[in-house]
Amino acid sequence: MTTEAKPKHIGRNISRIRELRGMKQEALAIAIDVSQQYVSSIEGSEMVDDEKLAKIAEVLGVSAESIKNFSEEAVLNIMGNTLHDSSFINGNNYNCTFNPIDKIVELYERLVQAEKDKAEYLEKLMKGK
Image (tube, rainbow, N blue to C red; front, side, top):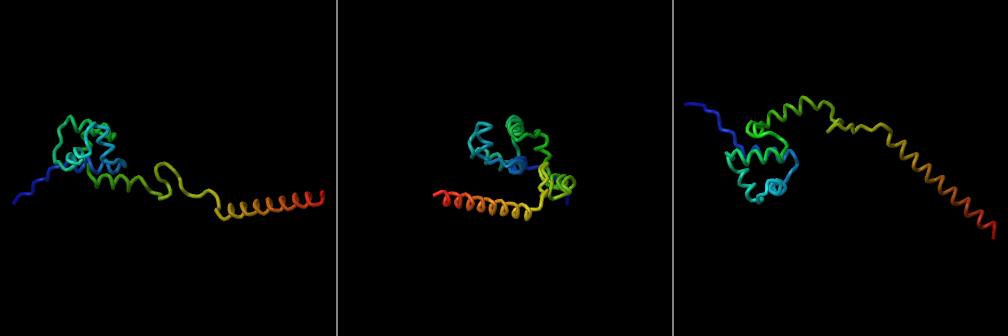
C-alpha cells in the first residue's frame, strides 16, 4: 500500500483564490475574454494549460506558481498569525474613539436648543403683531 501525494487541483485553487478576492465567475470570464461557462469548466478541471493559467493569475493578482501551490491551510495560518486584534481589519481600526452615548446626548441637547430658539423667535413674531 503506497501513499502517493494527491495532485493539486488547479481549478479548485483558482476558484478559492477568486472567491477570496471577492470576484464572481462572470467578472473573471470578462477579464480573460471567455464565457462564464468556460470559467466554470476551468474551475472543475484538475489541470489548466499554462497560457490560460498565466492570464487568470494576472487577473487575480497572483502568480501562476501561487495558484499551483495554493493551500487553504497556509492562508488560514497567515491570517491567524497577522490578525491579532479583531478591531483592526484591512488596515482600519474599528474601535470607537468616542463614547456613542455622549454623542447622542450632545445631539439631543442641540435639538432641544434649536426648539427653544424656534419658540423664542415665534414669541417675538407674536408680540410684533
